[in-house]
Image 1 (tube, rainbow, N blue to C red):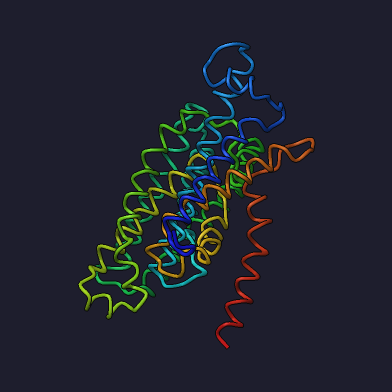
Image 2: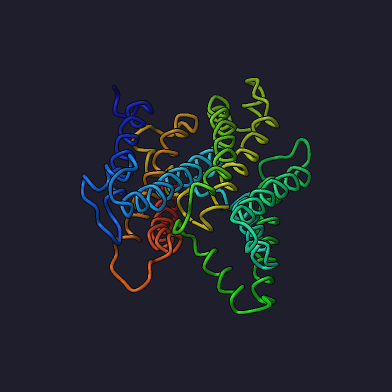
Length: 332
């Protein structure tokens, strides 16, 4: 297998992801041995181990991999669509719109009635925002128009989120909103997985289906159209695929930044710059990043667990600054 083959890179990343997920079962505030984890997985033995493995760690690990995979895949697809290596899911407004939906559910107290309310609101707002984006951009919109419409939606969603925080009726609601926006996988269960999982899987299908068209787009819209690429279909697949995948992820994890930006850049040296070949390795890299980051927040000593979104921002922001500097130097 070639070093720059997407298949060999995917196999390597998948093996690393499985290793990280397996290791995550043993690590946490209550470190477990091999026998303890095995008993917990099969549901026999000490009830404490069964509860820790099946009700706390297993859903958290699976959600971390799925959310990270969604962010990495969407980031690679959006970078290919917009032909911009600095783009990520926040560019088209899907992340901020999903966040606004969750904030509305918390603000009005709907979240207290059921665990499914926040994911339902977040996913619904993400889909609604993408419908507005398509309407604003128009039937035959250019990439620039799509970006401008996305920035407008993202800015409006961020402003409304800030307004909700400013007008929060009590400090408890404000605290819940702030903690959710910081991003975390703590206290997640299989309930959230069953709710958001189908949306993320649907998004993966839509995004992966753009793999053949994205390389043509790297030549420009006119060149892609002359090669028979249906630009409108590719835009819709990318936009709504990102809405389903990222909206479903944000619905259960809160706001987690930089994964969609960083993951594609980490795997480019392995697979080259073909945006179509980059999709699957980016998804696996995003899943690996988030699983490793979650292991970090669970094992770093302290009185309170760090929020996952804080950790990814602390790691991603310096990488983003380096990327900007590197891009500027390469253009000279």
